Length: 172
Image (cartoon, rainbow, N blue to C red; front, top):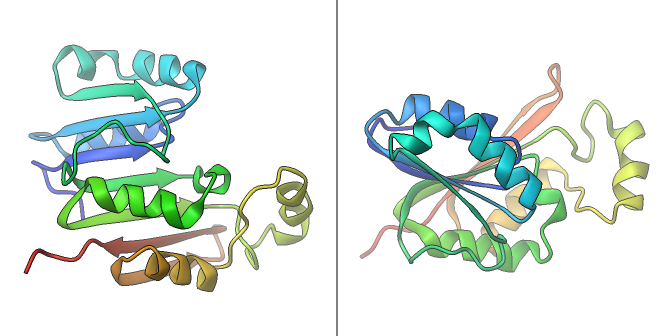
């Protein structure tokens, strides 16, 4: 799924581990990260300092609701354990779709989700946090509502995670 020359965005890049892994796969491409928290931006920059110095990684402070990138910039956008806190799920996913190239993909990974292994423990916590807590089916519906095509969902109940992917339509 990750091409060696891809241009990739990680939304909610946190400590930068996902950026580091994506940069190792997109060896001839570029990886960008965005996070709303100054501390996360600093941590991600520290973890990826070599790749930043090499010009292969860039990390910015920003929000998923108003991404600081041009239309059609990315082959792939990832969001790992961050979607829960987005202010407007449909509009924010449409904003991600805006920055994807035609045919580009969004991948969302979550360990906290309805009907998952830790549901009994996590559901009350997610409610208190006022966080989006979606089932695999609701995640699929969200991708479709935001205008994504070729939506697929995967669940690994034994390991306790789910993944959803969708593509931006190709230009006609």
